[in-house]
Length: 573
Image (cartoon, rainbow, N blue to C red; front, side):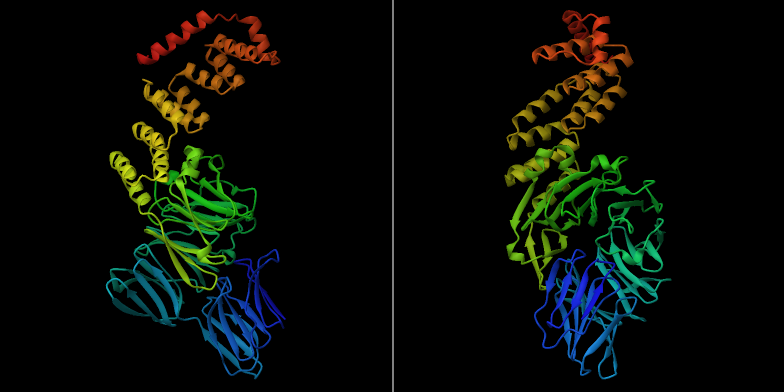
């Protein structure tokens, strides 16, 4: 009888004579179906921010979350509610009734939590803040109707119809206040040092917690009315938006300047459903995790000069994800399991370590289609499909380990892993120490997880006298041959760069370098001929055939040249 489609969350809401309301995705697949009501559903309506919807029937007004579960049920004596409409700020709903009356309802009793603080919107202009640890309560009153509120990073940010108020958790009496130009705040996203306000008419605005406007990022074709929490990710230095016109594209902004980092959007092969930025670590290593239309989870270093080269797949069948608040741990629900990656960046360093540095837990206890709400400290909170919250514990040791690594306390990190005796922790330490090029710790960690070949290779790297050569070998160990070659060429280690390509069977590149630098051409030809002889293959490359006719190869001469190169390298020449 009634249907409504939200452009923000791309979900369809329907009500019919079967006395049920239902939520569908944009492909017509059912997501939620309510229990039957006493009367047919006469009206349904999405809120403009896509977070709530209202349902009307005979003497019935119901407020529901976007996933389908019910916040509240009222029984006004109005007859059938035939039509429902929301205010622009998603705080008021009006209904046209069968008895000729128009009813108005306000969204109240909204609750948000962060650590030991619980904030409840008791009335349109009254808010209660409770500290459950110290058992204290503070009542906050506002001049205008509260539109949006967000709690995190030691701050509560509240927007009313005319103002933005910023509270610190240690001082609820004197907020920092500034006026707002827009009247339609749809989202507030918090980061460690700043926050983002999304206004469906005025656009995007980034502020510090001191109330200073940092930037107002935008791009051609931006539609803020279609943005939601899944299509925006913000950290203290980076903002990522999913393209409004083509959801395969990502716009990446430097928050300090408000400018895009790339001339064109970064495009993925499939539509992107949700994005999330990590909150710690260096700016250049800022990681973006996103889930695409196929429910595959990808990780990308979004601030890299060539970000597509850093695009790696972490897993599939992902329904929800969230970064840890103070470390680079990543939690997700994957194919019926709760999964935590202790160090997702291992995918850039050694892909063999990625499955070893993650842990699983059966997600059956969380019910059907749960969503991760927060990942703080040693607990991850999820919301079940019925709206109830459930918390699950996460090991505290990865957080301690990453804190040690951030302080370069490698001995303490090793002692911790030896005390815990957890292979996932050892694998995480192996990846972190390899990324930091701390070979002694990497050797110990790889030995602990029985990676004998890699221990031997690290031992070989440690014996190399030249620092740049060691750096190149570590890049090769991390499966980054282009970076390794560049390091060698920049350091003037031509033979090592040529030999690297020979060992990788990149014969044309090896010959190209030898010709360009006028050295070791005979070395490349000799190794090529030996390779072909070992596999009984005839030479077919015209370039190699030509140079084989012009240059003679003598293994004694070649070996003497190689020994001289290594001797000069040891002597620092």
